Image (cartoon, rainbow, N blue to C red; front, side):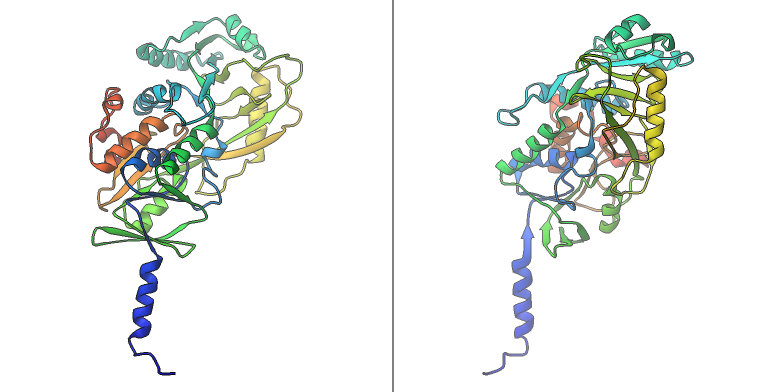
Length: 395
């Protein structure tokens, strides 16, 4: 058999590499709530692919959230994004979900002796927002949340419009909507290399897949700074934090399913009904490296001690414990915008504990900014600007 010409192997290899290269208009790194919501809004405007390092989307933060929609939660930027998202949650597009995205819950803040000023400061925020929140006496607070020890409480307020969020329905609604428009999620696709050349990014995954795209969207959650470093972009100073929680079955309280989420004015504990049990957290935010975070025994012990001191609950044995990551930048706001030094590299990061309740507005806003168009009026009307979301505000 005649040998192939000397350049044949190089030609064949080049053809193989060309056939192995996949192309998309937008490649999103991370399939949690940040990446999924942006993908949902971008899918009508081009080919969207999400690269997810884990075996299923939302493994680290989204899938471990006991989320509550609470309009007063977070700083001014977060509150505006939350308020701008309410209309979507109340009336999602047809086919988005078969389930209600929000269900009534309410959020009850109680102050112990020495915490009165904290409650007053929160009340001032609520008064400015005109949410319909009400002040309560300690007796009224205990009528709403009967496990509380009335003798420990000196003041209280209730936000009646706070609501439980169906996290899975919201997350899956975004992914399903994206897929219906031709987008796709590639799981087990950890990104190991990012190179920009001739206005295109070449992305290599651990599965030896190669993707080319003009725009990379970094929605990698706690790993967003690591992805930026791969791309030669500026880090935004992201700090992942561990939040631990437990579930237990309370005894002696009858039907507690309608109790509000109840939390301390110092925000170092909360509890709420959850699927026939009570969810408890010490509301910790312990700095950790990006990781598959697990609950610490001390976190759980602290949670039990705090809850048993303010309530008549006796937590003999949790039925389940877990932890999740909440990632913040210095000002505790969300980040959405193009990187200052790397063209075509877009940030969606620092969702903290607000990512799900802000996801409709944040996803739509980021999709607009990626495409180079103004923020939609329904979002801008809440006072949000491109500059408020940009990472450049952190300089």
